[in-house]
Image (cartoon, rainbow over all chains, first blue to last red; front, side):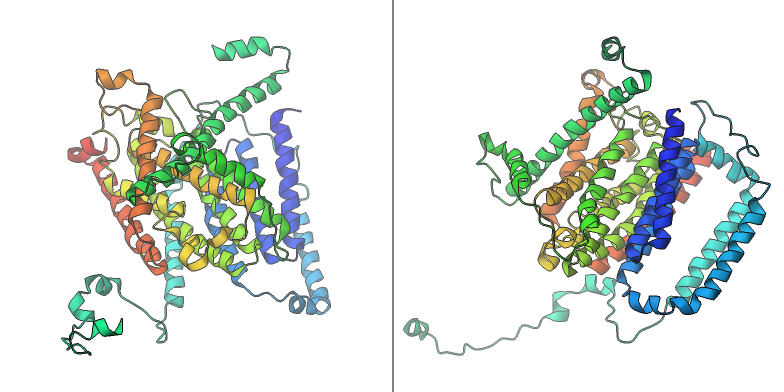
Length: 207
Length: 349
């Protein structure tokens, strides 16, 4: 067995293990962390396929940004496990029906069209091959319209999300940094000339 | 030459294992000096800030205090590692590792000179960006696993901050790769050759500033150190850590600072290239120039800490989202125009 095969199996074992843990573990934070591990192992497998751009972007986007935000939210949630598990038997029949349907659908798709003999290995590229460059050329020439449309859909989604959540709340303390910076002493401070409380010369006697 | 001697010495070992040991030796040769630099960087910090505040800093252990970092390391190793009762044991123990490992792994692609690089991979710029973005997990996991309010507050602040500044950092790197036309750090440096006016700090000045500010924010250093915020949340995410666990977080923070300094040097300050391609400057080896520039940039981290008061949390978010990101977006368009309109192309090479 070559090093490449060895690393493929090692990462695959970790990937399958992590993916199983994501759905079986009870604690949602640990589940999210196992999802991070699964992403990372998948990225490692892509590296063995010489798809280093995809692998690094998977780590950069999903591990570095998306899952951080996800963990951020999951950690803030107050999840009551007992209440979540209360309806288990009630939803079991419907849930198992959906599960069976899913398994049948996947089997129908995969049966007869999937297997090691159906797909031959992609040819190994030389040391000069640059996956990032190849992907870039494809994206910006052949698939440029699809790429741009996808980008616009994402932009619309961002604007929609902001528009939906943006609302004025009267009870929040909001301050304008520009005004804060421009504050001068005269705006906040008033110096009042005042006569001393005690007549001059009486300090010595007290101390 | 050394490689050939090694091959003749270990000819009896099977090929892959031989290669493995050789690579391991190279890794040790990078990590060893790096750890030494980290140790003496903590010493430099205490000395520099000391003198900036008209103190002398540590001067008791060894001559002029030079053995202070060794003493600190020994002390931390001797201390008991306390695991809080209600903490999540495994995550609590794995968090320091998660924070140190990316900080060290990123050094694999850093070219110290033209030839001195462990892995000269094609997309090394992206690799570094991906690994530095993973450092946040150490902080988040530590904050959550500690099961402590202060630690959790620190982790939440750090997560929001790193996600915000990572975008600005990524856009700054987009500018670099547009001008250099390569994702490989070695080629990016070679593209800057010719003298200090050819380095990217000049055509990419806004991105240089944005990158360095984001770098300071990503390493949770003053003035962006709300994740630790001594005066508000004691020590933030690592408040429950003691002994070696604390030391590993400390190591990670300083290794990250040196990494950001090295990356700034590679992308904007010409890496190992001498400032002027003339006789007295070119006599010195590239490693010297790389080290000297990195040390100069790393000094800025210490200077910042002694100078600036801590940002308020909403100010940090405002600076990241409303100032730095728009600046990078505008400058990327400027580079794009500059590269394709011939009157400006001398500037953006």
